[in-house]
Image 1 (cartoon, rainbow, N blue to C red):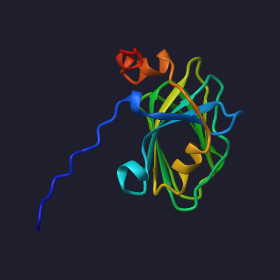
Image 2 (image 1 turned 180 degrees about the vertical axis):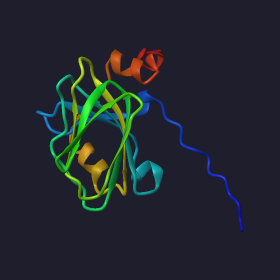
Image 3 (image 1 turned 135 degrees about the vertical axis):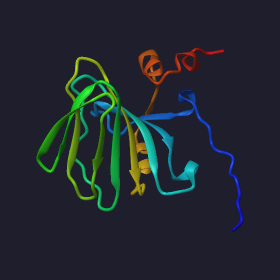
Length: 150
């Protein structure tokens, strides 16, 4: 067996590309890794939900989607079953499960969202309107210093 080491790709929030898929959406997605960067069929992003924000109901034919709540609280609904979620919780949505994630808290909801395989998720995100992080986003991501221009 031949062992080889690949230098990992390291990014910080200032490197992430942030999008709002549709103008009326109440969430933004910041691509951390996607098939173009990871050289594999996955998409990893930070999803930011405004107060009262939620995803439109959606489902994936083959992909599983995982949400890890970084900050805030919300409600996850899949095929009619709902559960409250808060910082530190993980949620795994199976293929074909129609699901909605909504922010029920008084502040923004932040999740690390991973979809495998990509199933055109990164392409959908990139088809949206580019937006920016603000100071609150950068503080939550632990990199307020990256928000300040040098």
